[in-house]
Length: 115
Length: 114
Image (cartoon, rainbow over all chains, first blue to last red; front, side, top):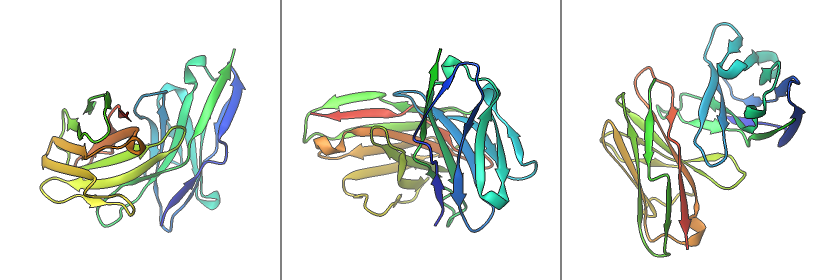
């Protein structure tokens, strides 16, 4: 079965600093990979996704992620963090499993931005 | 872009009552809808998958008689929490996908059982 690990439960960065959120996955074939952001009490917003092709994926709000098959990783990056980026970030893997195509989520990383 | 509407956004009710949560795809036909549950400060856990016109597939450990799912049309799925108890209090999120569509998430429903 597939799994997703986000090693960092909580990260604090200063506004304007760069950011990297780690995500590792376990799956036997090439997965579909996603990053979502969730503000408190809100649903999920898709930041970006990887299905195939270019391993560096650009998303919304200035985020990007790089798929590295050799490391089973899909880390999320942003060169300069804004205070509004403070939220919970979830990495997810989507697989074709008996047609259900459900997503398996990591445990999330809470990002705090200091002024 | 595609939008999924979830209603209500928040509900507070007494123990023993049943609560229905609706999930609608507004501008696409959702062949599959998913229901997730999220406990405070935790990740989303898939509860069940519903395909239009067929019975929902429940994840291990999820009581199908407790969490009734109906996906009667290509734009609507409902989750009914029957005889709710305080331990059912949680954040419930639906998502929907159609042909050649990724999953789109609703804004979630915060359920509080007193």
